[in-house]
Length: 399
Ligand SMILES: [Zn+2]
Image (cartoon, rainbow, N blue to C red; front, side, top):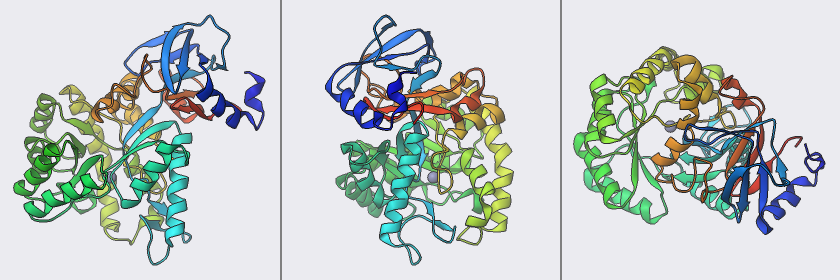
């Protein structure tokens, strides 16, 4: 590797360089995000965008040969403000035990860990703090992924109140609407909103030009949401084949999540006793794991468009890439399909396929490189060595 990488001043220097003049990234193995593998290519980047991909012939600014280069990964489902407080217990924002400052710094740490873990775009669904964090990462003042947020989660209200909430949050800068059509899996996942409430949320979101992402475990809640025009279903633990067929027919995206359940089970003492994190709730989550694997396989069979979402909460930020591994190992997804769910398909679900999610001319220069090749061994996604967002290098080999 160029000695540039080995010095501690490399990062600011590279960051300045990338903005000032074209940079040439040399690659030996490149997975383009759309299902293709390219070998020995150079990526030309100007002003934060990819302006060319060609056979590697020029002297590179950055040499990533020996690694596998991919588009920056996209997580369509995170909760970027959730953290463990000084007592090692879950918090989702300021509280009686954590000050506003502590909550703020925890969120800053979360976004930085997420970016260093290879994710250059995330959708946070959602908390008020998300908006400020989003704006700071967008301006470059804060190191973090590109963030989209719902700012709030809709869980109740009359249809009129729900419409007003959608309008208010759109005015406040929400990028999407997040709706809870069913209870948590820890409470059985039954439908918790009426068809009228769901129609109000999805209908008003559409009128406002926003996507609607729906938390739904039961078939009833998911089906009502799909019929109401929502754009994506999260979790979907108990979905039947008919609902999956309907989703495929209507182009509704599916975001099943393994990491969140594993993360809760692995960190049980940090959650147990808070709200619905009961022994019964943990038992339901454990039972949910094979159900997620099953619905995942059935969704693939039904040709539902599957996106990568982790539902990353406290304990999972920075480990988002584990979701790729669970998908391959637990539901038999091919590594290429899993990678596409976290690149081009995720970008399409966000309405951003012309900006992110693949390595192609005209797109944002968002790149991640790993040691090894995830197509041969999906656990290679754990070994991120390089992260670039909008042409700026945030992580490079040796740093
Ligand atoms: Zn969630």
